[in-house]
Length: 514
Ligand SMILES: Cc1cc2nc3c(=O)[nH]c(=O)nc-3n(C[C@H](O)[C@H](O)[C@H](O)COP(=O)(O)OP(=O)(O)OC[C@H]3O[C@@H](n4cnc5c(N)ncnc54)[C@H](O)[C@@H]3O)c2cc1C
Image (tube, rainbow, N blue to C red):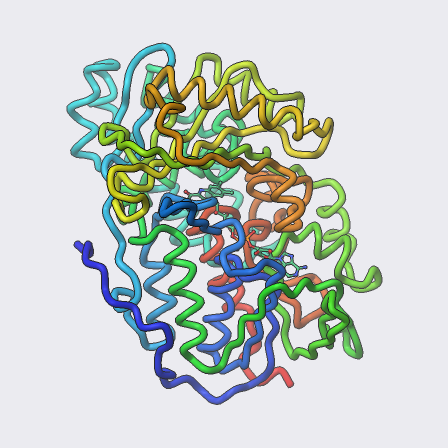
């Protein structure tokens, strides 16, 4: 098991890569943008990454306050082999850049109606069944079998397969029907577990991909198999360290340049329906043989691509897609430790079904709070100064769509409610040891990332917005425009967006595009 930190040089000698075959511009340095840039360099392109923010990462940003390090977004790393593969493509070993620490338990569920469930490797689940009901012990192997079948279909076969043709989709329909992909994740768990708390524990991880477990397709139960096979990890130094290592990997090739503070305002198309150049906010123009767009596809198809270059299907998707809920996140450092708090704690209040429906419909902040608490220093003590703990607490809220809330009023109120709830449950005396506290709401996602309606996860992971029905990894037109990230197939989440870069690579022209 890899638990040792490796010294990380800031610049690495260039590995052997093929000579350049063209100039590529990648718009956005989120995880998918960085992964795409790495794949393009490995294929011989000279790459420029244009990122509007001051640093790479996008949703995976990181900030340090008084020695407390806060990951801004993702905290759960699954499918670590997808990261290793990026280093391998450039002839490097991930271990020389970054260590992955095992997380234990993977998640701790605290149910308001009573009960704690530590979700983790199969052998750690067994001793807990009797606290809920006797039956799951017998039916768990059948659940695992189902998750395995979903994983083979949904991940192994389809995650990195581009769905830009209706025929590819049509070929998958019989298999998806056979696996019951039309049922919700929560509903499908009813075949195996009777206790609603267990059903939630096995379907709720979809919430970290922007899906309401009562609406998201049961195909997402494949996450269970992904976790069981490859584990749940945390990069030493946090997700920010993962982002920095990918940016360093790129820089070290000498064939890629990452430019920060550069907002792309438009794409310029030319002869043969190709993108010729991208225009930036400072009046700059950068010509390209190939463009990869990593931001929210709604922004691309509404604002960046000339009207005449958008296909009808893309216009419709950009106009009528359903977007995930928004997020309100409170980040705080405490000058004392809470060693009994797990790295990932999910506090489920009563009546979560109707609360999530209220939130997803944009009908307001729910009366009941369902919270995800992240204690980074549980796994990596370096994330907080000695004797302290570094936290964030996430609460799903409506996005900015239907009835935008007055966040300058609602935000501080919600923050107090969240801190109250944490004080009453897992962090007694929290306010007495508060070092600092700040929060973000859906406006931050809209302003900083240009995320449509400030949605936390982009286009919602609904069956009718998946695969062929999601934005494609290659634009319908122009021919040299590609997309990677949460808004395209296969969808949000670190494994999803890294797989989107894999899918994109399969579509790249074999020869020099110029
Ligand atoms: C709070 C939170 C917690 C999460 N937890 C997990 C988790 O634990 N595990 C997991 O697997 N997933 C998690 N996710 C999901 C995962 O983080 C995201 O799906 C993933 O990081 C998205 O990456 P991306 O590359 O698609 O896009 P982004 O990270 O959104 O990056 C897109 C980039 O494009 C830039 N950009 C956009 N438009 C322009 C423009 N016009 N010009 C220049 N730059 C532009 C943006 O500034 C941004 O940097 C979480 C997400 C959030 C928000």
